[in-house]
Each structure stands twice: as structure tokens, then as C-alpha cells.
Image 1 (tube, protein in one colour):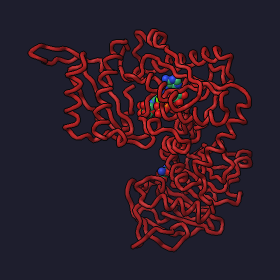
Image 2 (cartoon, helix red, strand yellow; image 1 turned 180 degrees about the vertical axis):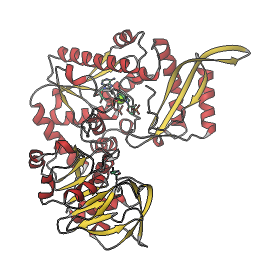
Image 3 (cartoon, helix red, strand yellow; image 1 turned 30 degrees about the vertical axis):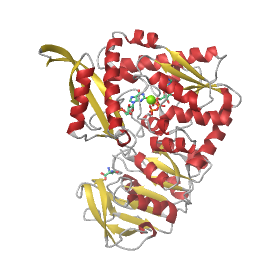
Image 4 (cartoon, protein in one colour; image 1 turned 30 degrees about the horizontal axis):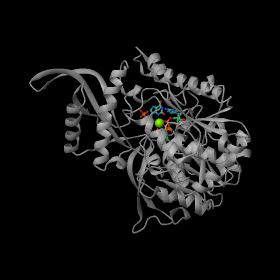
Length: 518
Ligand SMILES: Nc1ncnc2c1ncn2[C@@H]1O[C@H](COP(=O)(O)OP(=O)(O)OP(=O)(O)O)[C@@H](O)[C@H]1O
Ligand SMILES: O=c1[nH]c(=O)c2[nH+]cn([C@@H]3O[C@H](COP(=O)(O)O)[C@@H](O)[C@H]3O)c2[nH]1
Ligand SMILES: NC(=O)CC[C@H](N)C(=O)O
Ligand SMILES: [Mg+2]
């Protein structure tokens, strides 16, 4: 946690709680999300929030065992903002009434101002209506004592309520989603006008605090950092190096499933720019050997996660032992692994660095980016002066091409995929599209189709191209390439890569798809 003034987001299981954190941080206010059942009196005494936001959630307050905040939050004397379920929980606990059923609103709605409020600064400009995004079945039927209505909508007579005396506010809609046109402004009005935050949390401040924290955690011990060349581990490595200098050794693992020329590129780029000890391990025999005959995606992931640790352990021993392993774990990884509403959450896929790692580890983890989103990591990277080629890189998953070759992995398939992917990425860069796309890659399908090339019959594999836009990888849309671009890439790949005779483009968004195919 930071020494900065900070806000607490109490999570009741909404799908969009992370967006609240993003919006709040965009206004320069540091905040953290904690599940409602972890926020008790002791936690509050330690965390000392300057203000609190109660998130939305799937429950209804009148359900048996509905999740509710510790009542102590209302006695702290700090401003509280309840969103949707959070508003309902607050009103319910403070003596009002919530009803269900009759006035469901999903999607776009318009709220109408009833009276002026510090929450509305720079809103309702040029009219009395604001476009907002609703997603609720219940609504406030009777206000709690002390509250008044400041805006309403056709389906929610209490769309915005306030108790200015105590600094308690609530909205039935979701200001954190972009569909609420002035949602960010509204949250900013809460943090700045109501709660009095200065909004001075910056990457420069984060950098200084992170360095202090790393020094305090590590002392004079040695740290190994898994360096992939991706933006997360590169930023982590440079930050840790700033903190502890040559107590840090980076380890780059080539598992035989990296892209064409990637290993040389990463190692050279890093050595050219930084004077940080870097061990370059060729572990391709080991990884490809253990993956032989394995086609289940989760099995692949677990094998790779385990082998990474083995390699890190072996390298640690070679440098005379290390007490800590550093990785570029981000905030979404952390939040996704916590189920707010108690029940076990469904595992979609085990990310190699979060899944298997901790139980089997000899080393303790150093994760200085645990509290940041990807775009914040990029901002921190710029703050640290990392060269643009590191910062702008598309994410590349730790298991690499292993999860882009559905079915069994062979060296030959990996080689085919590497060649095709290199052409695809080269064309993207040539067309000036690389920075517009969040992530692009190819997938080699375990399907052969019939083709005709130079009057001969071919029976070869299908290659799928993927490209998505996203802000944090949590949701994504396929990238709408011009047709001539797709045609050009397909022709080049089929002509130049032996073993591929058909190219298709994946137009699935996330959800319902995921970005990777496995
Ligand atoms: N080939 C590799 N060699 C060493 N460490 C790796 C390798 N691949 C992944 N890691 C470790 O696993 C962590 C998580 O991988 P992940 O792909 O999420 O992050 P990244 O590679 O640093 O950044 P990006 O998400 O942009 O690819 C990395 O931060 C790094 O510590
Ligand atoms: O380091 C990683 N280890 C993994 O095991 C892993 N699996 C997926 N990804 C990356 O995460 C983002 C979201 O991917 P999905 O939509 O496929 O879950 C995308 O950017 C994926 O490339 C991984 N990164
Ligand atoms: N999005 C929400 O927070 C929904 C709250 C509550 N379940 C309702 O339907 O009103
Ligand atoms: Mg990566």
C-alpha cells in the first residue's frame, strides 16, 4: 500500500469493479479493491481510507446472506459513494428500503437533474439530462434518513442520492463504464470535491515508493528476475535494478516456443541498453521434451509453469543462491485470482505465472507491479526511460507458441508457425498498424485442407490470424482489417511458408472468446 492519501473500493462482485479503480486512478487518486468479506474493523484501522466506494454486484440486499459491508464503514467519518448494489446496500443498512422486480433497466438511460450538487460540477452542461448506463432490477423505494434525491431516471426515481452532511452519495447507474458519458467526471467530483483528494498520485510517486518497498523487502539478499522481453518483466527488472543494483540477476528462458529471432532480439536489446547481469538459458530441449505428446491446454500450461520454476531454481543455485524471484505480475492477475463472493471462481485458464508458481517455490516473490494495470505499467516504463521498443511491444504469453499450436506440439510445427507469424507481424508493421492493435499473432491449426498449387494437389495445415483491440486484455474486440491487407498477408504466407495452404481470420470478441486459443 502507498503512503499517499488513498481510497478504498469495497467489492461486491460486480463484473466492472476494476473499471472503478481505473477511473479513480485516472484522476490521480490511488485506490485498491478489496472483497467485502475481507474489509473488517482491523483492516479499516490499518488501511485508513480517506474515502470509500461500494461497488455493484449481482446480489439483492433482501436475499438471505446478502453480502453487506462492515457497518463500521459508516462510522469512520469519511465520504462514501455507493454504485448500484453499493447504493442499495448503503440505503438498506442506514434505514431505507429496497424493492425488486418492477422497474428493471439494462443499458442506456437518461437521468434528469433534480437539484444542484457538488457531484455535478461540469455535468448537465447545456441541458438537464445526462446519458448513463444502468444494469439493475432492484431500486431504492424509500430513502434512508438524511438522504435527498439529486437526480432521477424513468426507471430509478432515486438515480442519484446524497447526504451532503455525512458525505454519503449513491448512484443507481454505473459511472465507471464508458457508456456513462460523464462518469469519470462524476467520480472525480466525488474524490476531489466531496472527499478532498488532491489527485497528486503519479507514476513518479509510484516509482519512488516502489523502490523503497523493494529495498525494505529484499534487504541485502539476491534476487532473480524472470525476464521475457515483455513490457511487464522489463519494467520490473529496471525498477528493481534501480532499487538494489547488482543484487539483481535477470534470467531469460528460451523454451523453444518463442517467436522467430526473439531470443537474440530480447537479449541484445536488453544488453545494449542496460548494464544488468542477464543469463540467457536455452532450455528448449527440456521444454519440448516434456511437452511431447501433450495436447490438453491446461496440461501444457502446468508443465510449462513448473519447468519455468525448475529453470529459475537451477539458475539461482548457479549464482550461489537467491532468496527472491521477481516477476511482472499485474493487478488484473491478482484480482482475478481472488473470488470476491466467497465461492470458488471458475478457472478459464491457468496463467503460468499465477497458477502453479507459489506452492512449489523455494524463493519468495517480489512483484513490484502487483498494483498496476498494463497501461500504467507502460506509463511507469516511460517514467523509467525504457526504450519505446520495450514499451510498445504487444503482450506475449509466457507459454509462448505452445498455446498457439492446438493439439500436439512438435519442433516442425513450431518452426512453421514462427515463419508464418513473422510474415504476419512484418506486414502489420509495414502497414503502420502495430500500435493500433493491442495484440496480434497466428495460430497453427491441427487441421489439414486440400488446396491446389501449381496444378498439384496440396494437403496442408490451416493458419488462423488473430488481432484484437483492448485496454487491459480483460475484454477485447477483433481488429477490423481492410480486406486487401488480409488478402496480402494470406498470399504471402501461403506462398512463402511450406506446410500452410489456407489462411483464415478470427473475428471472435472476448467474451465470449478469449484472446489466445488455448
Ligand atoms: N521466456 C521467459 N523467460 C523468463 N521469464 C519469463 C519468460 N516468459 C515469462 N516470464 C516471466 O513470467 C512473467 C509473466 O509473463 P507475462 O507474459 O505476463 O509478462 P511479460 O512477458 O513480462 O509481459 P507481456 O505481458 O507484455 O508479455 C513475466 O513477467 C516474467 O517474469
Ligand atoms: O504470461 C502469460 N501467461 C499465460 O499463461 C497466459 N495466457 C494468456 N496470456 C495473455 O493474457 C491475455 C489475455 O489472454 P486470454 O484472453 O487468452 O485469457 C493475452 O494477452 C494473452 O496473451 C498469458 N500471459
Ligand atoms: N449491477 C448491480 O449492482 C445490480 C444490483 C442488484 N443486483 C440489482 O439488480 O439491482
Ligand atoms: Mg510475456
